[in-house]
Length: 441
Image: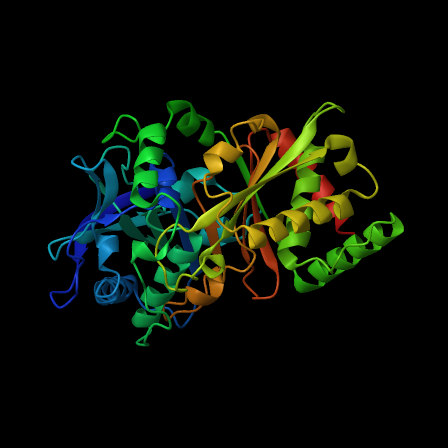
């Protein structure tokens, strides 16, 4: 028997008073790239305490607040569609649309599930709503509430082309604020005309012709889906003290190596340098190999003109780095990695859309030797996801697509960083953990 059982499914509609777009919201070229990697999923785990209402009351609060939130986030209740006459893909939204709201129950121990370093993926995957996004039209968003004996889980599945990580947490923050009876802090914006890319809509169509030639079918490669089921997952948390020591160690190593950094490393730089070093040491690479690093950067604030902070979409640019494996296994590895990450961040600032087409960036990369960073050390997932019964005990990304993917978010205490790691081989994960702990001493 499955540890998670679906007991109900319904739809939460858009309020009649909501303003819906007059026509489909066409994808930008940045968003078109995500048509074949559509699923972005997170689960929020809440352990019961004296302040947590009964499950039926939680369901009512979640449903009513979701309906109210859709008043300003109406396109998330729409469908992703193929516009045959132009070749575009976009979001079609009307007053009759709704978000699928799944209710489930689970017999697993939520305390163990929320606290274990090594996660029970079979259970976690059942806590987010399953959505078929392989054929258009496809839903944009679905949510799930799951009852445990000792708490509740809230799962969210959204199409990555419609919302990147920042957009997802903007939505969750607004939904949670409404559930608490407060006014959301950010006004969402769905205006794609604000994202200026050379080539405009025709560029987006050319991307679609390359990455999804069989529209309206957008099914990912079956090998990708099957491999994902075999991943080993662990989560590590760096507290504020550990991050500070890591930064100091990087500065010291750089100076002792005669190559001081131009400025102290940011939290993102330090954590990514640590993860990249561990990745290079956990796999049986050859000495002549290079270890590669790919990360996304949010470009909202760097576009000309900048895009509003409340922009709900995918607004990302990519960056690819390579360093020789011996350099990442040497005594000064952390400093070398941090210097390379700093350099790539500077290049993103100088040319914020240069890496928007991440498919071309990774075309010459070796997927067996690349570590992929998703999320951000600045994402305040725990802070924004208080629906009125406290912060989540744990929040985790569910869909991780790569052997060597690392997902970042700010930790529960608001000071540290949570690092979720996905690797195919358990032995590689053990080696990653060993290096991670050793380098933090």
